[in-house]
Amino acid sequence: MRKQLEITILRSLFVVGIASFFNLIRKPPIKDWVIIFLLKSYIASIFDAIFVKKGYLKYPVNLFKVFDISVLFSYLIFPVTCIYFNQVTRNSSLLGILAKCLLFSAPSALAEHWLERKTNLIKYKKSWNSFYSFGTIACTFLMVRFLMIIIRKESRKQN
Image (tube, rainbow, N blue to C red; front, side, top):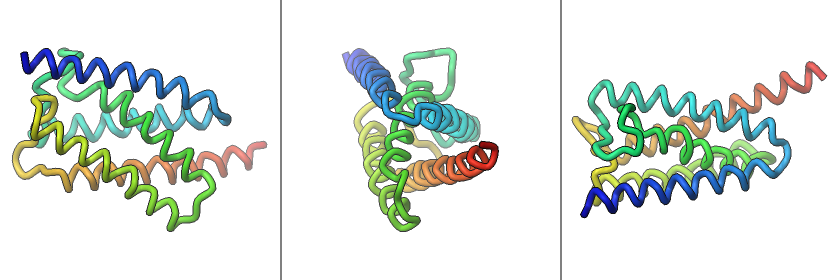
């Protein structure tokens, strides 16, 4: 019964993630949003694979059983959230970017904390905790945001 509920949660997140992605890419500039989506997916999957391999995280219930990482989180939910973050910080100052990073990272870490406590979707191992998740989430949001600054600058130089 519990596992079925967890699968239902994952399927619901999948549907919400897909719908959110298509809603997001309707806003220009679409190429920026796709680049952000791909960058965040790449970075998240690397971090996720490292943390799983080192034994800090485990995903006992997963939609895609062939992967040790959470494909749904690394390749859909996290990248979609990063697009939202980049959209709301597009014209922000450094202080605004940092403040909004906190506003995006804290709910993500809290949701992960709740899922870790109440479900088998994610399990923290060794010394891992919600603060490490928060820090990792915030760092990757900022990493992608600042990579996009560089990409946009270089793109303008080429034009």
